[in-house]
Length: 208
Image (cartoon, rainbow, N blue to C red):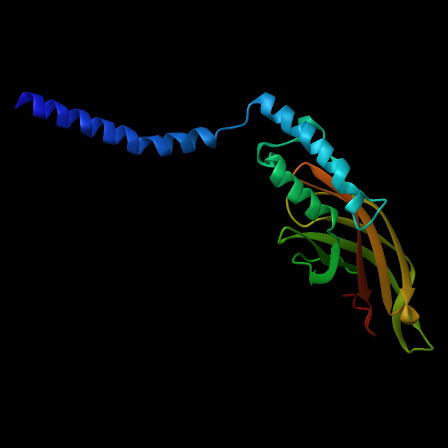
């Protein structure tokens, strides 16, 4: 009788341990990568960037791999995942769809939010302009005048570094078209993008 009880107890213990194995394995698999694996993967990343970068739609604006020390824990991907991510980023561009600023701006300023889409996720970039207007007698209304100034910045936590801009007044000064350039960094990969937007001046000098 005692022998049967002992066998049952041992079977129960084995069953409990077996049920706990998947959870333990999962916990081990989700632990942070060791330094050797990170170094090995980083070298694979370097080769992938060299292979994928020529696929960029903007040939002179290829991909750049961030320094090893700048990688965050969430940036590490398997080489296969990294290749898919890099190819997506190489072919990405800033779309023309835009939104309005959520925060109030000083008079004479306006902002357009454009979006960069990577792997189905939209990343906002705000293009902020400071303008001057004047009355144009021929049109009988206010229009843009002089040279506006622009900057651009990330609308979220992602990294965007403004590089430069080029703008021109069209439609008799009623519209200002601008193209800004900047470097966007995500997941340890960066690329220079061009972002375009148009600002409008209504007859009363309101800018949108």
